[in-house]
Image (cartoon, rainbow, N blue to C red; front, side, top):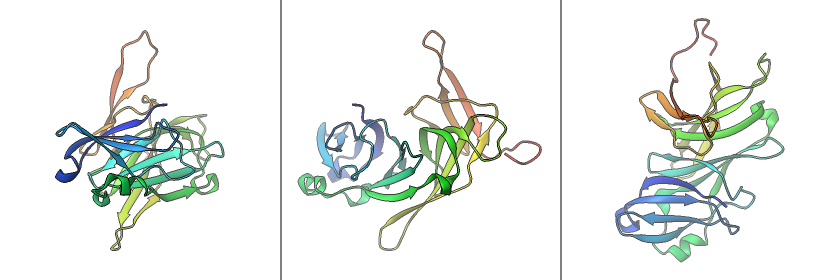
Length: 216
């Protein structure tokens, strides 16, 4: 099975500049590999009921890792790993669990035929998740979508996330699943999924410019 790998800057005593590996084992384990110290350590595992492989993840400004999954019933679920609360004792850390912040039925998000691809933290308190799917009333069978999740950390340290209105992208592009999506200001940069015998195509997508009719 395949873990999702992200870069993160942890506290120095936890390894500093590190690679975070989310999932990939039947035990729902997560790990951090310190690039600076050449040391592995355990992290709090994925919550019960979470997919254990091919998870879309985003590093939210080195404060938390958010995971985004969907299931056969078209639920969208989001979980969080707080990077600021990692216990120095990795055995204690490994006995904890990531927290769920969203469990959203299709009747709430109203998306259909959707598939999550990749994610990145925006400059504000949002995370952008690239996806393909269909919105209610859309004439097209499928389109490229940016799903926005507004995240917040309360005074007690608990993370929350709110699903915001999706943005439709024209023309339709499908980035490779679990690829690194980068952000330059308000512009997203990603690689288009192509046939094996064709060169990769890199695209940049403005999240602020809209069509002339102002709809998307």
